[in-house]
Every structure is written in C-alpha cells, then in structure tokens.
Amino acid sequence: MKDMRGRRKASVLMMALTMLMLVLAGCGGTESPGTETTADTDTNVSAAEKVITFKIGAVGPLTGPSAEAGRATKEGAEMAADEINARGGIDAGGKKVKLELLFEDSVSKPEVGVSMAEKLLGRDKVDLLVGEMFHSSVTMAIMELASNYPDIPFMSWQPVSSAITNKVKEDPTKYANFWKGNFDSTGYGRTVFATIKSLVDSGQIKATTKTLAFVVEDTDYGRSIANDAKALFEADGWKQVAMETVPLGHTDFYPQLSKLKGLNPDVMVTVFTALASGVSFSRQFQELDLATPQMAVYYPLRPEFIEQAGTASEGLVWTPLSFAPDVLVSQKPFADAIEAKYKVPATFDHAMGYDCLMIIANAIAEAGAIDGKQVNDALSKTDYKGLLGRYVFDALGHNIKDGPDFLPIPAAQIQNGKNVLIWPPSRATGSYLP
Image (tube, rainbow, N blue to C red; front, side, top):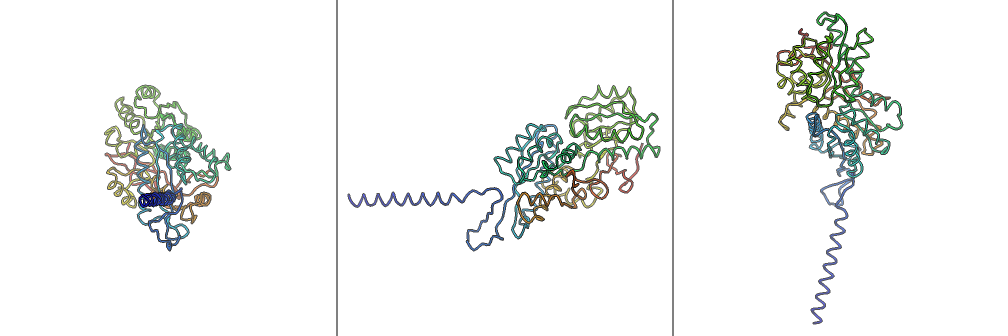
C-alpha cells in the first residue's frame, strides 16, 4: 500500500511539472505587432537574422457599388506584399521586416469605415492604417481618428478630394501622421478643362454658346472634381447650365438626360466611380440620341466598360488613362502578373494598390525601423517611381503632386473599341476623332 501511495504521489508530481512546462512554453507563443519572430530556436541566432512583422490594416469597399475597384486595389497591394515577403522582407536597419495585410470592408459607407478602422487599430493593433483605399467621404471620416493614434501613420490611397488636403493644411498638427496617396481633385479639374479647351481652340469641338453641364455621383469625389473643373471653365467665360447629382451606383439617367437634351449644352462632363453607372449613362445617352460632346472621369478606366457599353462607348473622351499596358510597355509585366495570379484584367486600381503599398515598404526601409514616428518621417520624404508615375508628397497638404514630372493625368478617346491617348500632346498616341 505504501508503494502504491508513493507511485501516486510521483505520478501527480510528474503531471504538475508537465503542466507547468506547457504553460511556460505557451507564454512565448503569441507575438505582439512588430515583435521579432524566428523559426530557429537556437539561442545563438543573432537579432539581425530574426524577422519582424509589420501589420498594415486597410479599409475599402470590398462589397457594394464600388466593389470592383476595392477588390482590385486590394489585389494590387497583395501582389506587392507577396513580392516583398518572397524575397525575405524589407531590409530595415539590418533586420528583415515582413508585411502582414489585414483588410476590412467599408461597404462605401463612412460610418462603417470608421468602425472597421477602429477594429484594426484597437483589436488588431496594426502598425499603419490605410483609411481608406478608395472613397474620399470614407477617408474624411477615418482621418479624424489620426490624432488619437499619433504614433501610427495613416494613409489614404485612391481618394482625390481636395477637401482632404485642405483639412491637413488647416490643422497640420492634428493630421501630422496622415498621408494622401493620390493627387487632388484639382488635377482632374485641370485635365478636364485643358482637354476640352484644346479641342475647342483647335476647332474640333464647336462651342457656340460656351455652356456646359455636369452629371456626377453625389460623393466628395464627384462633387469636388465637378467644382474644380467648373471654376476653371467659368474663369474662361463658360457658363454652367446644369449640375445634376445622383446617388452612388445610380443607373436610371433618363430624367437627367431628357432635361439636358432640352438645354443643349456645348459640352457635358460626367463623373462616376461605379461601373454600372457609367455603362447605364452611356447606353441611355445613345438611346436618346444625344450628340453633345462628353468628357468622362474615372469609369471608362474599368476594362469591362468598353465591352459592356458597346457602341455607346465610341468617341467618349475620358481621364485618366494613366495605366495602359498595351501602350506603356513598362506596365505590361505587372499587368501580365495580375492576370496570371487573379485571372482578371489588370486595371488602374491594381496599379494604385501596388504603388501605394510599395511607398509604405520604401518608407520602412528608409526609416531603418518599424517605429511609427520614424516611418511617418520617412513617408514625408517619399520620392518613389512607381507604375503610374513619380510619387512625391506635398509638404503642406500631404497629398501626392500631379503633373508631367509627378503623377500625370492624361486624357484618352475610345476609338474603334480601343483607348487612344489624345492629351497632353507630349503623351498623345493619336488624334481626336469627332
């Protein structure tokens, strides 16, 4: 009996020791954001050989009316991160940094975007927040969180509204850690105005009354571009006869087009980010037999647009044709890689996601660390040559500069089912066809 009691005590002691060892082992099994990890448990492994994980959280429209653009931007960013991680990560101060991407769906709604941003910041403990990937209105809501997290860099990727830049200029301290990864809506306004003016001055478009009309989505993106273009036209003696705004994803344009047919403006400007809106507008424009010269912003860059709009797309002038792998040979390897990986045609959205992720990676490398304040300082010094052009942040507004030396915003015309660059003359691959 005494031997049995002894064996029981020894067994209980062994179980207790085993449990203690498991608990101690478990304490080292979870890594906080930015901590060093290595598969090698050898204590002789140097710090330089260890890998650091840098978490990037991104909010964008993965479902809803702008889902095509959101998903494509996500895929472009994933392509960049995969390339970086496949070669061992980013060399930052002698250590290797691998990127981990976390995406949340804004459903194109500011309030949802803010909720998802707070999740990424509070629960997921990201090291950098992209808020957001696509919509200006969602960005303007999320950027209000920036001052609550001064040690975490914030970025937006595709949003262009000048209102974002103006907020940074008006309160540089509050938004010191916020960076706008795209140019301002003023850039689009300049391209719309300059393209139309060049065609009018050359006699290719007749402007007998110098009147124009706008049909735009009711978002910060649509309104800001229309207002920026309108100011330039009015300074040149033009008169706006209509400013029609419609909800994001709107597809019934018969009331607006019937009104505009009666007004008979010399030029019509349209701004939509939802592919369905652009296709519907073009088809209904053709159905009602309108002959007004039209310039479009954004929606024709979707590769599905020409196919879905068919003959209704013919002759449409639009901007920005910044991504054209069939014309710009340097972009073709990227386009081929996207198609091979995701089985979809590569778009401007893919290129923007890729470029913006690379800007972040370069900032980490330049900082030589993953410390938020050091990365933020490195972002301010960005000078990166990407797929779409040269990215340099404006010191005051924290927006990317546009123009021939930075991010160009060229215009194209759809001719015989293909896009032809027509403006500026220095980049043109063909001429406007009336």
